[in-house]
Length: 383
Ligand SMILES: Cc1cc2nc3c(=O)[nH]c(=O)nc-3n(C[C@H](O)[C@H](O)[C@H](O)COP(=O)(O)OP(=O)(O)OC[C@H]3O[C@@H](n4cnc5c(N)ncnc54)[C@H](O)[C@@H]3O)c2cc1C
Figure 1 (cartoon, protein in one colour):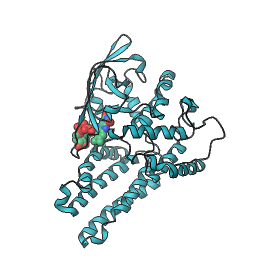
Figure 2: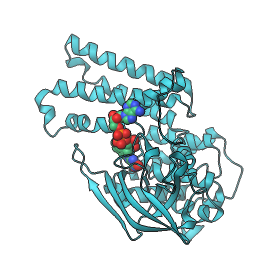
Figure 3: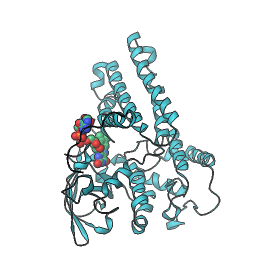
Figure 4: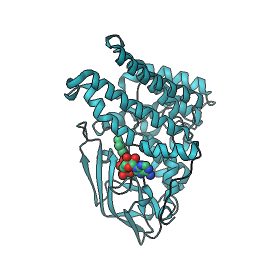
């Protein structure tokens, strides 16, 4: 047992089947869900950082953290299907499946795919024990959808890189211990001039400033990097090949399709609650939204639990539906929805979901090019 805790014994017995594992998870969640933070989704709200860490520690001790990660790094060493079953059971129980997506999914998958033995040893276990919160430092004021145009620079100086630049929209940056950073190591190239770093957020020269959103919350930060020295040992993957590392991390969404289907179904059921008090035109509008959602839900079920380019259809469909529904509910409430009400919060929060993780316009581009086979957008510049 690590650190004298009641850590789950990862070494004994044959691997359970996915069904057995799911049943054990269901049972455990039935007993422990009341200790979980509210189901905040993929992005950890800064004010829930401590509660989230405690929850992650509990999951680790019970054997539900790093389900598909190798046991030498504290994981359970089970299959991606087991990990997917865990996420699905958490969606049914309405609890977060892990502390945050950036650490437990993006950073973890990048380390497992590209990390050196030392990097894996140093970072994987503290992610699933909840000791370290990670944030994502990709977007910049002039590089969001077109991430390859990022300009934050990392210049080699002996056994360090010296980093200067500004990042933005960094979710939970101010509570993060470490960050995954994409920075430019070759100013003469685009995609091929970017490297991927593991950054200790307590390094000298790292400054985070909260950004206030229109819903009143401040879940993300601007991050200023001034003469920050990153040891060469914290370069993940080869120099100038960080684009591949970043893209591989971003597309590692396996297992989330089933879970998002469950929350979509829950939202669809909730949507019908004001049905009795509506006039005929409002009922038609509501049913049109519900039918759209039900078609999306059916598409997700046909797709199964693995990620594919259809994920763009699901992301676009769900976030646009939630936005239209938030507008519909606000219109029903009339002027009262402009005050401090759940309808106002939903209305002011919904646009963010259409932007995070690739905007609706970018999802439409992906659907056009990769599903419909339409000609690619014209792109200029160096490779
Ligand atoms: C809630 C939330 C959390 C986030 N968390 C993080 C995080 O933790 N770390 C991080 O690095 N980033 C994060 N982001 C940033 C997010 O990835 C970017 O906001 C997103 O990629 C869009 O980039 P941008 O804001 O620079 O907009 P831009 O790329 O400047 O886009 C502006 C507008 O132009 C449109 N547009 C751009 N290019 C095209 C095109 N080729 N065709 C058609 N239309 C186009 C866009 O759709 C958009 O409407 C977060 C964003 C949100 C909303």
